[in-house]
Length: 364
Image (cartoon, rainbow, N blue to C red; front, side, top):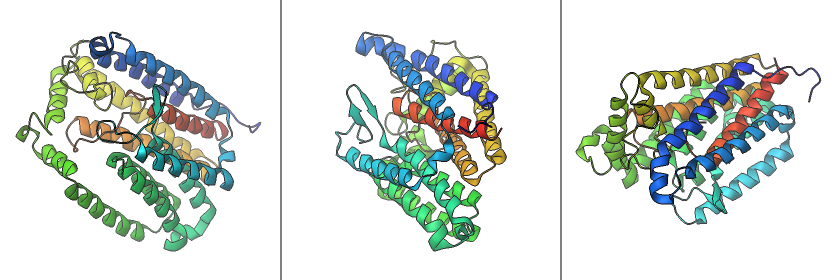
C-alpha cells in the first residue's frame, strides 16, 4: 500500500454497513414464515445470509487494503478472463433451477459466474481504455475490443438464460466507453443496434414476450405472467406512509414467491412504508454520489474508470430493481445490491465496494 494513502471514504463505508444491516433484517423478515413451514427453522435464510455477510465484510476490508493499481496487470486480467469464461461455460451444463442454469453448486452453497463477469467486465474495460489513450476514439482499436468482451459475456449469460444481467453488463460497458472518451456517434449507432437486438430477444423468446405483455397489462393474466407484478403492487400500496410494521407483511405469506430475493423491496415498502422506501433510496443515492465523487477525485485514469464502473453497476442494478418492483419495467430477476438474499451477489458486490473504498483511500 502506498505510504501516502489516507482514510477510506467514511460516509460511503457507513452507508454500505447500514444497507447491509437493513438487508440482513429484511431477509429475515421476508423469509422467516416460509422457512418455518418448509425447513422447520425460521432462521434458515438468515443464517446463510449472515455467513455471506461475514465473508463479504472480510472481503471488502481486504480489498480496501489491497492496492487497486496492482489490478492493472495484463497477465492477471487474462487469467481472470479465462476463469470467468470457463465458469460461464460450465454453468450451462449445471442442472436447471427454476428453468435457469445460473449457479455452480459448492456443497449447500453456490456461486453465480455472472456476478464474477460483471466485475471482470469493469476491470478489463478500465484497463483497456486506459492503455489505448487517444486510440479509444477509433472503432477498431477503441470500442471494438471492449464490445467483443462484453458481447462474449453477454452471449454466454443470455444462454442461462439471464437477460437482466446481460443488459447490466452491456450498459456498464457503454458507460465506461463514454466516460473513457470513445466516439459518441459510434456509440449512438451501436446503442441503437443493441436496442434493436434486445427487442428481437424479447419478441423471439416466448417467455420474455409474455412478460412484456404482462408488463403492459398485468391484470390480463392475474394468475399467470401478471401475478408477481400485481402482488408487488399490492405490497407497495398496503404500506402507506409508515408501513404495517416490521415482520407484519401479508404478501410474503405465499403471495410473493421467494420474497427475500428480487422482490424484497416490495416487502420493505409494505412493512416500512413510504418513509422506509425513501430512506433506502436516499442511502443508495448517497452511495452513488460518493462513488462518482471518488471517480472524479481519482488521480489516475484506471482508478477513475474502475470507480465509475463499480458505481454505475450499483446504480444500474438498483434502478432496475426499483423499476421492476414498481411495475415500470417488465419482470426480470435482478437482486437489490446489499439488500436481497443471495450469497454470490452479496459477496462480489462487497468485493467491488472494497475496491471502491481502496480507490478513495489512495486518492483522498
